[in-house]
Amino acid sequence: MIESEERIVKKPQIPNSPNIKLHTNNLSRTMIILVFTSLLLITGYTLTHLDTANVQIGSAFKELSTTLHQMFLQPNTGTDGFIELLQGLGMSLLISVMTTIIGAIFGFFFAVLASKNLTNIYLGTGIRVFMAIVRAIPTIIWALIFSIVCGLGSTAAILGLSFHSVAYLTKAYSESIEGIDDSTIESLKVTGARFWVIVFQAIWPTIMASFVSWTFIRLEINFANAIAVGAAAGAGGIGYQLFVASGMSFDFHEVGFIVYLIIAVTFLLEFIAVKIRHLYLSR
Image 1 (cartoon, one colour):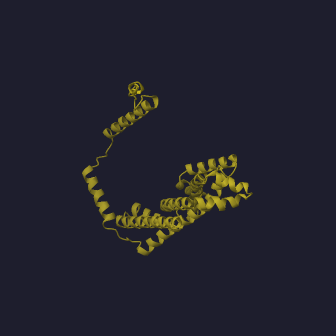
Image 2: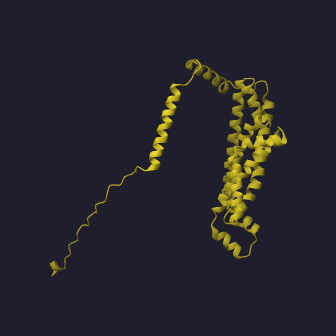
Image 3: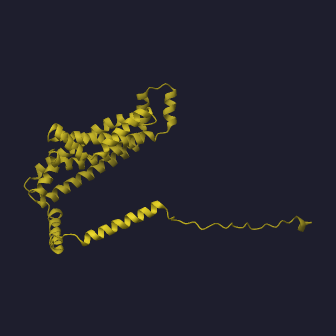
């Protein structure tokens, strides 16, 4: 009786499966290989037929090492002096702070109007397309455009940096707003809350951490751009002094000192950004 009730359990057989190819030969992969091979061939041909103009590689590297030694191991204030360099650095920093504040204010306003979960699709699409066009043009080009309208000076630099900052922060803020759970917004709409009440009661507290992060990232970008347009748009500041020291007087000792000042300010901005973010998140 016991033997008749026993059941034989068979081990399931693993079905045969075809071999899986990790890399399939398709058109896109073939095109990538062809483009990469073509670039290698063009690069090799260019290097072998490059006109060196009788440049001695050994002497060039020796002069380069001498220049780098003067810049980073023997920095000094040069003919400008420490106070003048500090004033130029402060001017560039003030331009970057001012343009970041302008960009943050207008960027948040346009981000609210461009967010898909807050406004209608046509208004949001129009704002996003316009901001994308503005972002496609480099900041220094905007500064040069405004220098034609306003003339060379700090006004053109401020307008150019602010214009690009608004477009950049609009995209960053709108993506943070669109990441908010729709149920929070819908629950406030059901209660009859007005549009700007929803923005400042639900949107603003939620994206505050992202707002701080994106704003300080843009501040660092604007600081670098303020240095770049210092000479291009005649805005002055540390950028103009760097241009004069490197391209006109060839005072590489002063160039190195200016570079160290710029690096110090960049680390300071990053330190402040981290502290403010931790202060907000710890509440």
